[in-house]
Every structure is written in C-alpha cells, then in structure tokens.
Amino acid sequence: MLLVFVILNMKKKIIIGTLIIIYYMILVALIRTRVIVFPLFLLSGYIINRFIKEQALFYISFIPLEIIFFITLFQTGTNIGSTIIYLVFIPITFYLGFNYKKGSFIYHLLYFLFLIFIGRYGFLNLDAVTKNIHSRKINISPKIVLKTSEDKTIQLDTIKNKVIVLDFWTTSCGVCFRKFPDFDNIYSKYKNNPKIELYAVNIPIKRDTLGQAKKMISYYKYNFPVLYAKSDSIPLSLNFNGYPHLIIIKNREIRYNGTLVTSSDIIFNNLEDEIELLLSEDK
Image (cartoon, rainbow, N blue to C red; front, top):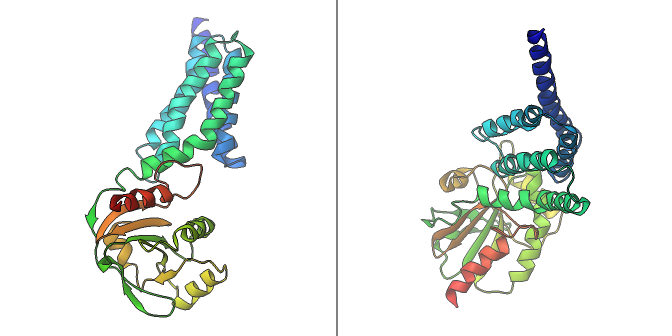
C-alpha cells in the first residue's frame, strides 16, 4: 500500500514537471515573441503555485525546466542573455506564488508589471551586454579595401583622424534590412560632421553578384553610402561571421567589433553612444 502511494505521488510530480515544460514549449511555438512569452509564462507559474500546497510539488514545478535552461547555457548558439533572465526569474516568481499567497494584491500587480518591464527591456539590454563583452578591445585594423557604388577603390584602414563606422550586411540578412532605417537616421545625424564617416558594407554570399546587391539596396533609396567587398575575406580577418555586424575604426585601430545596436530601448553598446564616446576623445 505504501509502495502504491509512493508511486502515485511520484507520478503526480512527474506529470506536473512535464506539463510545465510542455506548456512553456507551446507558448514559445505559438507566440514566439519573448516579450509576451516571458511575462505570460511566469504569470502562469505564479498562479499555479498559489494553488500548490506541497513543498515537493513546488520544487518540481520549476526545477526540471531550470535544469534544461542551465544545460542550454553550454550549447552553441544559445542566447545567453535570455537564458540567464529565465534562470533568475523562474525560481523567484514561482517562489513568490507559493509562499506569499495572502500578500497584498497591489504587491502582486506591481511584480507582474515588473515582469512586463523585464520582458520589454531586460532581454534586449542583457543581450547587448552578453554579445558585446569584448567589443571594445582595441586591435590594429587589417587591410580593408572596398569598392564604392561608382566602382572606385577605397582603403579604410589607412584613414586617419576620423571615426569610420561600418555596418556589414549580406543580401540574405533580413535583420540587416530591418535595421537599415535606424542606421540611415544615425547617418543623417552625423553626415555633416567631418570627423566621422558611416558606411553600409556588403559582403557577398554564394551566388551573389555585385549587381544584385546594388539593386537590392538602391530600391530603398537610403541616404547612407554603400561599399562592396569582393569576397568574404574581410569578415574572416575581423573574426566575425554573423550579420549585421558593426566595426568602428579610428586611426587604424579597431575600436569596436560587435553587434549593431540601434534600438532606443537599449542603453548598452548603442551605436550612437559608441560614436559619441570616440568623438569625445578629440575634445
């Protein structure tokens, strides 16, 4: 009889832990946008734990999922910033739901609004930090020779006394094209400043032709100038392979080598801040 009770009790724990994981996976599959998935999932976990009475069931409600998130930290391609936020806020939120069932409604509401705030701004900013930890490490620039739209040659690594901003993109990069309007606005802000030059730099991919790249970018009629590489040797020499990618050169030195951050919601590694930081050195 005792064995049956233990088996049934374990079965209950396994079911709860499994259902929590499945529920999270369903939310991600249906909604995908973490800004919504994050607060919705944690609110659900918070509510579920308000009805859980057993301490063991409380632990089972979040520990299996936490283990999965922890394992993903060590997998290639994992969004480390997002994973860290889940690892931190899942146990906190589930704990509050389990232990503070009779707390003031105002406190519960404020915490949920805080989760919405984290979902809206936390992921973006932590992503920017974790992806650009070594972005400001100074290195001597390799040789960077590109072609203008008029087929003129320009060697950027030899330019002195200017901040050279390079937004690297490919014709297959959807994110690149979504960020071009932001980059264009930043270009418009600095275009009359003689101490800075901004370029969008096309890197060819397989089956690309120079004509295709020119046609794709000219369709949108952006104001920023576009430069073209003959091969993918430049990204290799700068040690990056993802797009869009930002390189900032000043006096033959790589002063920034990281992701392109243009959103006003992100305060870390934002392109305008990086530009102002380098321009301020000459004041």
